[in-house]
Image (cartoon, rainbow, N blue to C red; front, side, top):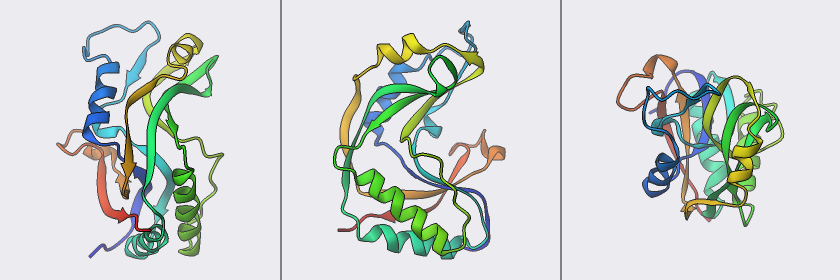
Length: 193
């Protein structure tokens, strides 16, 4: 039974291990490597596609039940990582990411279901425009990443996969050095359909 509040809750899709292996091949492994752009590469235990960030949630069990019910009627859907981008824009970037190909719109439908269920539970959700992505790196200063984004334009990263479940996760920076990393699985959210 889930009890209590969550400080930094979010719903996400975690790619399968084979896709994570492909991403790992793109990310520099040498921690001493000097990157002139001062990129802080994310680690495997952080790789996910956020469906929606929910922030503080007072009733974790209520939220988990509501979102589980909301996505249970959605069929599994296909995703593939493809291309790259940067926030706020490639010319002046703070975040470098891989794009998500959502050919049938299943991820967008899941996003809408999650937002609606969270709002029905009293969670204040003010989502920015939905740009599905997987964060690869944070930059210490705004940097021009147009060549990096262009290099991955249209490039598929890993195989396509079928999403059969979402995950309600909690981010806890104090868990950064634990074996499971900074994210704690609060509840699996199986799709039905």
